[in-house]
Length: 258
Image (cartoon, rainbow, N blue to C red; front, side, top):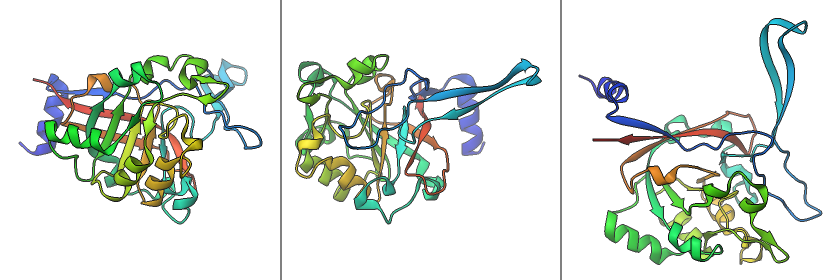
């Protein structure tokens, strides 16, 4: 049998499980909040056009309005000023949307400290235990933050000093962008940067470094706890929005079970 035939059979028999890493997209989906005077992204909205009625007797359909970076979404290089001349989301090669994934689990640390930052030494320790990060793959950073995704307040976890959500240190962001073999970073939080990243040097180092290096971001992932540390294959499906800086996406993981 061919490789694709083997895969199709494994999907049918349960030898390969499809794990949905995507958060449901609705008006209740948490969105990032920027301080004034910056523009704000739109929440997801549905506008009903017809529902088997006089507006359309045999069909139901809607218009929708949302920001490119709402819910589980993909960040293209042109999302940040450092990648302004890079690919828009429609120009990302399709072959880069199917790639292996490594899952680094720091949910215990973030439960103790919501401002926990991933450092290069954390990644090196993981590699010592599990092997190198996948060349051309994703680093998925598990923090357990998806458990908060039903509440805007809990998800952003903000107080008078700003949001408190886990992220990546500036030095680790540079390392991921410039030295690691991965094509992007996936997180469970509202963005790839920590809640306090506005105060880092440089500000928002994940966005600055990853986008500037032609790499990608994935945010608001769910169900990373169901993935192995290595061996999952990620399928990322953003809308090919011409000139778009990103897109809400369906993100699936193929996991071998046996």
